Image (cartoon, rainbow, N blue to C red):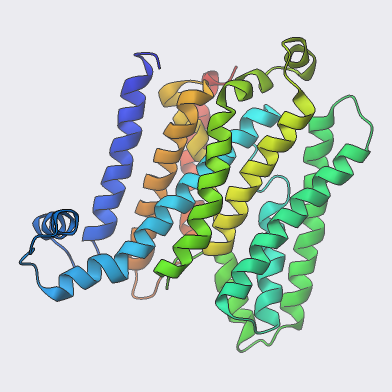
Length: 337
């Protein structure tokens, strides 16, 4: 790691720590920094904290699972966006470019339509995202073209539109009093009601997919070159592209299955990370993960505190992400090479 990357990584780490502190301390039941420290230290050392039981319950039972889920989802979306932008050599690519979000959305609304349990709905969403990307890749690979990346992106747009039509059809057929509100709320993104049980199916895929991308970080640098140059350097572009797409889709589908559709994180955070640490994926992936986790922690804290009722995450990320992305394009456009 070069010395110039260290300040950027420290900034990204500070963003995550600030997001964690804000998420644990702010809410309808405020928690002081001293109480938070005593509870965490007591958990680590086993000593008596002297903190009221209600405060400990708020930290561990109420906010703890939601805070961890927000950090994991934000990090996963940012890492997936980083991988897709580098792979497709396009700064406007986001994690749902190959239909992962649309497939997960269709799977979730089908689960709600058939009145399945929450875990079945999450499983439907997860499988839907994976199947959608598999279909996109199969169709894109079957089309002979000199630019396979462009074919993949166009196929993803077409399949995403088809899946979006499927979501619209299911919503049209749904019960407008019970099912339709649940579908709409899920599609807008939320971490309300997140429990410890939700962390297990989220953490596993996110950890596996991120580990694969980290292991491929040096080859991802080469994949940023045109295919002819990458192959000339001895990189098998076809199998490597499949591995990167599969890993990024895995973390995206797990995140969407847990939190619903949350846009802009995977589009904006990779740009900000690139401006802090440069284009090397060895630094870019951890920086994007830290920034994405910290950003979604702040957004989720706003979602549950800014109004008497909880505001969907997708609305807030769009409201904040749009002007931020415009500023980012104007200020760091030269960081893409």
